[in-house]
Image (cartoon, rainbow, N blue to C red; front, side):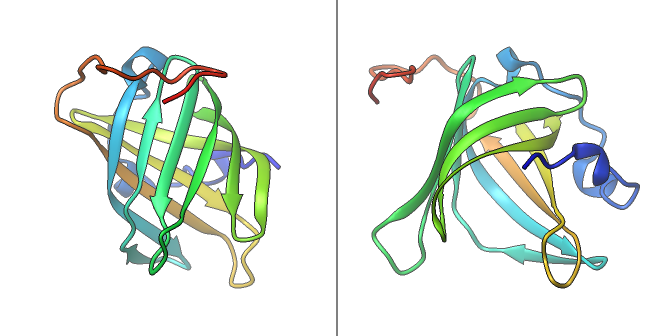
Length: 156
């Protein structure tokens, strides 16, 4: 299933995405902490309390967040491709129904200290909804990682 960014880039969503610019793969590289998650459904916004980290290399991405009240976490790993107005993430992740392999079109708006991303979901009983996630670069300005490497088949 591919979720299409143009399906949710409406005027109502531009207030969350702002006037940021699309990022290149080089600009996107780094580690980010999610600072805010907002679900927009039927014209109403709900702020969700959730910790999450997202990491981009030149070709690969991953995210991880803890499960509330549990020592386990949910994760996603995969590749991504930067397009003129979006990125496409090809992700293997652990969801509520187990392991899933999927792809997502993600609208990204670059900010000085990170980015905002938006994903549209159409399969909810109450109608379509949009997930906005705001990320800030971990550790401030972009730095080279020391002592670890994320590569295909490598270790962290």
